[in-house]
Length: 147
Image (cartoon, rainbow, N blue to C red):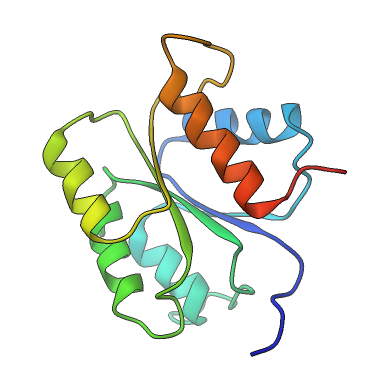
């Protein structure tokens, strides 16, 4: 298996404010890698597979995936990725406003790399520790920070 090309991130998110928030946080943490944006799970699959008129993107280093989206939600997309031999091993981080245990369990059963509660804020030490820990893990895992 050849090494993956340049590190990149696929953000699957339908809320423009959340997209801008992720972009700002990546800049703040000096993560300067290509960020591909899909508005729902169906669009993300089309980008990954080069289907339905979408250009195929290189396999991303990580997928940041919102659970609650139209057309195909995050858990449905994750299930699809885990059943596809090409994408079964993708690092997927779930983001959601939901702290429902059922969502968390479904995500864990689908082998997520991390689970981050929105709003994405990496400055709230203490009260937002899971968010900080999740994002730090995400950065360390991918080694995307500028050295």
